[in-house]
Length: 321
Ligand code: GLV
Image (cartoon, rainbow, N blue to C red; front, side):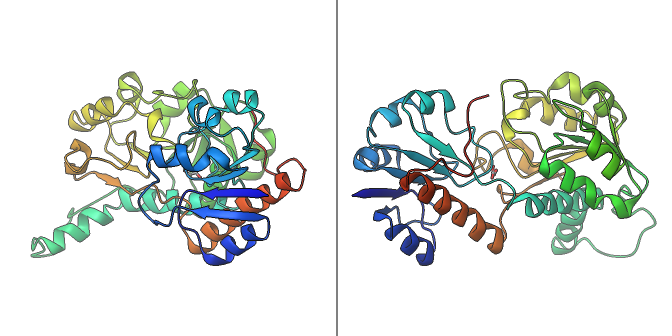
């Protein structure tokens, strides 16, 4: 008998699909993660687990789950999972690529528009009762049109972001682990060193995953090299950024502002200095949060669990590099 754990509430239609495979136990909460001790206990007899980024999948967890065959992660990123340990325990891991690409690029683009044209600041300005008259430079921002946009991480989401820049006549620079000449032809993007990208760009957009090479890459030295009128946008992972250095760069005027969908510690503390800065926009890690895309991500997890419980490899298998 297959036993499936789902660590967050998902729609009934997907639960039923899983019930066709075996017995399902679901942590029936939308916004509260399953506490670690409950997770460790619930996973003991399970053969499959559908988990979120809130769950850490490590040796302790996998030791507690001797029957587990698959962890289906409800995300494209999988830095919450120790892939080497999963391999050691012979547990398959899957993610949800492709289906969230356009939705996540759209959120990134929304953030770029919002920060460059001071949309959130403008709304607050009105609600605070400050709007008395039109002013020549009232809330004057920065054009994306004809600007230089530097994309760090030219994977699917980076490319989808670049495609959206077409109507803005922007120069697109990118930096990636490897050069992608096909993308260069299709998108008119130019490969540069990381150093050139951060020095030249009006907008530095990070879509890169968290890896040992990228962690803390946006630090003091990098913010110092960026243009003083540049904006930083992060839709990848929060731990690429040394937040104290970002705060200092904003305070010192080394960059003009930032828009972040991800931060180092999520959820962000309400007394976090970034929340007090007018030239900072933060959204609660909602890059892929459209109803359709979230449905498709859950569906992808279900399909991967079906694959493994039917004796096949998961279609969206992820492995240690
Ligand atoms: C979200 O951050 C994801 O990796 O899907």
